[in-house]
Image (cartoon, rainbow, N blue to C red; front, top):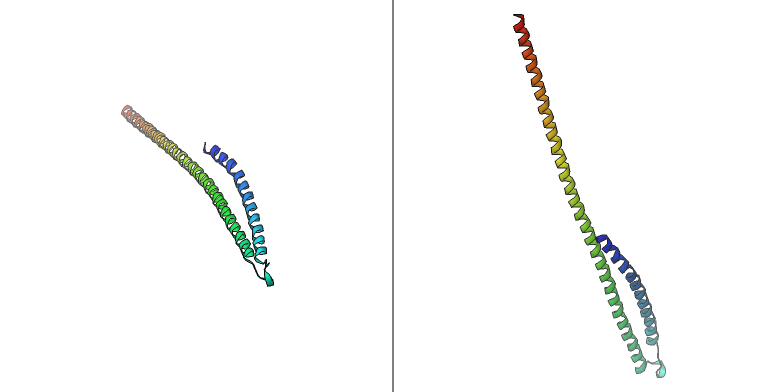
Length: 155
């Protein structure tokens, strides 16, 4: 049951992880492009005598705002990927926990079965010894009675 669940989760999350990685790479490429644009606007000086104008500075600030917004989107994507990975690890951990508990139960059953077999073997050995002692006593008593009978017949 849990193996099917794990398989389903892996099938579900692997494409999401791949899609998430591709989306993250795209966001990083966009941020890199925006950073280059910001650098270009930072060096832009369209004012008199090669100075920066208010318009140049506004453009630079707008690029910085776009970069910050893109950074926020990247952070959200990273958090989502982290949550997916944590969920996957939690499911795997639970499945391994279930497997180990199942194996512990099976080991307990095997230990009880082994203990029962040991007790059966001990019981049979005890019965065998009882039989051996009974046979030995019967043999000795027969030999003693035979000896006494022979001794009585000789007199």
